[in-house]
Image (tube, rainbow, N blue to C red; front, side, top):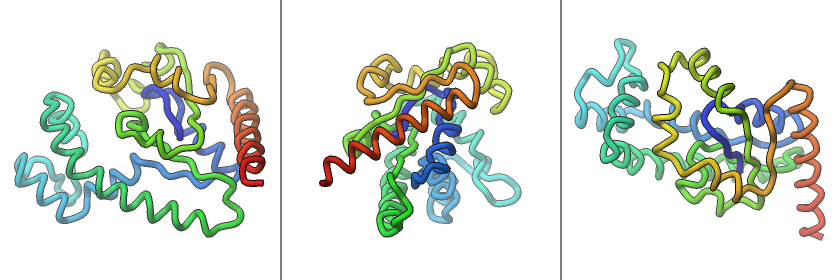
Amino acid sequence: GLAGGIGSGKSCVAKLLSELGAGVIDSDALSHQEINEPEVRDTLVRWWGPQVVLPDGTVNRKKIGAIVFADPSQRHRLEALIHPRIAVRRQYLIDGFETQPRIKMIVLDSPLLYETDLDLACDAVIFVDAPLADRIARTETNRSWPPGELERREKLHQPLDMKRARADYICNNRSSLSDLRMQVERIFNQIVTESGAIQR
């Protein structure tokens, strides 16, 4: 499992793990695919009106985000629609990775790893830690989020201190990419070694 605050660099760590031989399952990517399925899109239009669809026919994720992050009941409604469908896609990918000898581990990269109890399906969880100032800078630059948006969204999640305490490994993303790569390689090798010892 891969956890961490918004903008901590989980995607970068996931990419490094993939390069080492991990099969990465990105819950955000699965969500983006699922939300544009015709039956899901039609349900969202029925709930919230045609303004949630862009001229090209895809779902306006910014508009959806504004709705669900302003109203917890609407967020839960969306999650109840989307999460079971994502779970089906996730299991399909897991089944595929398990047939590939080159895949040394399967990584669940999910922003709601603990909130949806996905951590319980994992043999180990890596928490990606990064200073708040760095995370704010990343989200404001890369995602064009306004000031205060990161803090507002994180209040809807489980506390980072809890996630950090429950994780098996901490990866500190606070210096260079080469330093991050060394940490990821060490954690990857440790997990693979321990997994092999358990299997034997």
